[in-house]
Image (cartoon, rainbow, N blue to C red; front, side, top):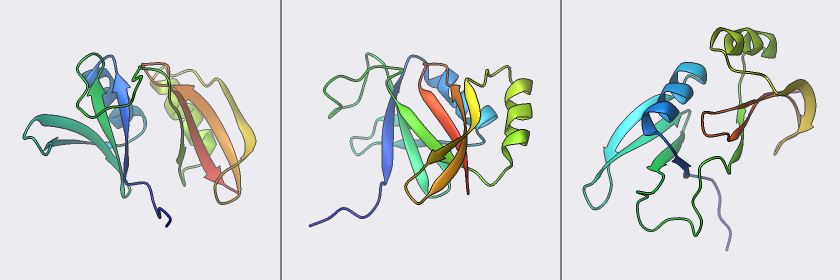
Length: 130
């Protein structure tokens, strides 16, 4: 028995609109509106073949994490865009770079990373391989 991939993850956020603005405008993801299995309208963020489902804090969909709280995630996203361009892009969007570029090790090998925070305080790592 073994799992083979991550299909999606869930972020609990203070503001769906604020999260959508950050992840679409700053990180280039795409907003996806969909209906859950029970027919309720939901919002996700798509990028590559992955998806982040968004839950509004205090109104999470069931089932949910035992202790869903905004700002508890630490996520690493891969990019092919040079980090110098990301630094300029973050500056244009008034997003503070907390650290980097700095060498790290990812799931498949060496990375060079920048660290920022999303509107909920989640730590966001943007990395290039190599």
